[in-house]
Amino acid sequence: MKTRIGVLLGLLILPLLISAAPLKPGHDAVASAHPLATQVGMQILAQGGNAFDAAVAVSAALAVVEPYSSGIGGGGFWLLHLAKDDHDTFIDGREYAPAAASASMYQDKNGEVIPGASLNGPLSAAIPGEPAALVYLNKHYGRLTLAQDLAPAIKLARDGFPLDRLFHEMIANRVDKLKQWPAAAAVFMPGDQVPPAGYLLKQPDLARTLELIASKGDAGFYTGELAKAMVDAVRANGGIWSLADLRDYKVIERQPLVGSYHDMRIVSAPPPSSGGIVMLEALNILSGYDLPLLSDVMQKHYIIEAMRYAYRDRAEYLGDPAFVKMPLPRLLSPYYAAGLRVSILPDKATPSSDLAPVLAQAPESDHTTHISILDKDGNRVAATFTVNFRFGSGFMPPGTGVILNDEMDDFVSKTGVPNGFGLVGNSANAIAPHKRPLSSMMPTFLVTKDGLAILGTPGGSRIISMVLLGTLDYYRGGDAESIVSIPRYHMQYLPDAVYYEPDAFTPEAITGLGKMGYTLRQTNPYGNMQAITWDYKSGKVTAASDPRDIGTAIVK
Image (tube, rainbow, N blue to C red):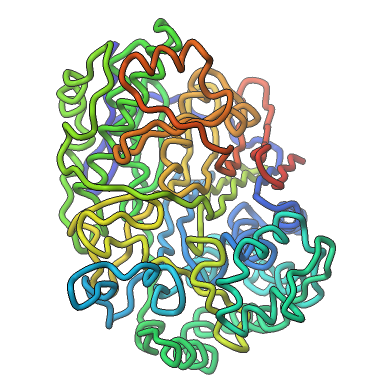
């Protein structure tokens, strides 16, 4: 059975026959990567805030308790559903490149990429978008004041919280980076030592910065004394920010990407995220197979091949829509997918070398964070945001408490040279002034006649394959717990290898895939998915945080 996948983007419209949901779930639910942030979300909901207030509060709280993954020195995407209007919208708070940025800024005089230049220090930092996104989200969609939404995060920063095991490990793993920058080292390595788990970590400078945003909105971060302090520190240490870069930053509210897989409606992230495009292209390929009737090995084979072809197109075509004309109707066409499907043999892996361009690859990281929120009225948020690698650039402008991102690494420093996540690209994702780098972050809603799911995850280039597997699991009848728990595997075109968690493949699958020509590489568990499901018939709401990490989920 073949199923059409379309896209709601610009003027393209896909009619979908999904029955209306019940009016209200009657429950609040929050899933996040940190117990304290999840509690903050429930606190805001209990105070009369809606899902959008909770998203602001949880995002800000994570900036305090999980700064190695996200923070107001970074950016991200917030996917919203407004229950009253049955309307979806997408808040793009992605960072953009400074005006002084150039396509060759990380290359030496011989045109070779300088190792680490796009990953460490203030030259690697793009202009943050998260503060503007939180202000925008509160102003346009929240019920409470911005000060109310930010109050829990301010308290956590000012009064402190016990350092958890994971935070301790993150500091220990990034000692060399943090030691380069005195302000960051003073906060996270007091006395030049990695603090033990249980240490009361206070961040008074960050509390003051959050208070400025709470009282002044955008102006508190993007203009005035704080902006000047950040720019002066960045430029004094080799960066290229200007006051105009901060002043001119604007959130973009976009139309989400909408498609379908069989009778399931999918709402996901549009460019500059690559996630929605790549997943819908892969699902369109898979729609030509009756997966439930196939053996386990054949299911894995076709899913891996769909990943391979879709990731290949990511490298070739995708970038910031303000700068690049992308062939989205073709990439999302069922006829294009049918043509790709013809190339997939039932008994053999497709060598990635057969799919131009052929480029080298490098390892990837897995940090970023995700939140899923549903309120009792049916409003919902899926949001994924980041400072990129652990502790971002490592650079903290003194007196601000803000760790700056290293998001410039998500651009292509040179065509064919992989970034820190092992992803390659061409001029479509080249650096340019005020351009937003291509992302894999893809907060997603799944809607069927029987219910819905809210999901997303960190994981760099593996985000897309994780959400794809979670989507297929939900379509098969999975709930929040199964979505976040299923063993994962990943193929991203290059390197030409399949990475898989323990238990993702049975011994029979490993043997069968090996005979087809796949290179299989077992890896440590990865990802940190947060999911919520709502079953319309029973009224049951379930929420789950990835068992691979320390997050929590609460339903009330």
